[in-house]
Image (tube, rainbow, N blue to C red):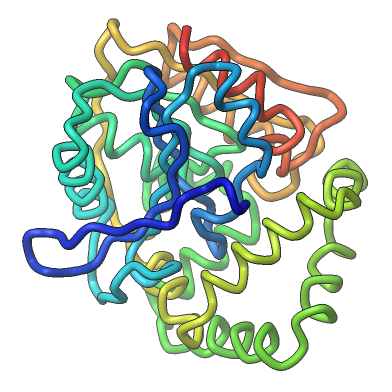
Length: 289
């Protein structure tokens, strides 16, 4: 990870927006939306892949994650505005968008709001709207619980994330190992790589470092109602899904496939939720096409 540059900008309201970047002089611009309870640090550490594909890569921390300023009561549209401001600051006019897990829903909102700047939308193990009649029946059980708690008993959700933050602070290795033990075998295989385990761990630490408040507010944003329009035909949509994924399941990507009718779909039999790391180069390559 030493090859990635830790940077930030001050937004118009003077908040800090932090991000990791690499390859400023490379031609192809790619922006990455991280997952829930993770951070911009949870990316594949091999920068040779980026150079080989001439990629200028940017992974952005949402509010409270990493060094981004912690705020309350923001929306996914607000995050889209932050990303747009960053692109303007960098002079980036066109970008390929990769959204992983919950970041997939944020990336869809960004693409909907700023479609003129998006070359391709790449949804990897992606979330779908949590507060929607049409997705209610296919939401995975853990996300149904998160959605219910945040809408009706937010104090329970806040307490839960604060407790997880304490566990990570006081017993990092034990807490990470407990999470690994709950993974499907396909994801455990990926975490067996020490370098990949390191970035996953760093992502969790940077997510929960402020007593879980960033994750709590992120959950509140995810649970708000949104309306997404059909993307422009000029935007290529690629969907990636592991058939063994038990976080965002194949049924959720089937929903996305029906929504984005002209998308290309990669449903991989021997992959779980962490396929964004095992298939990193292929995802990047496809995002540029």
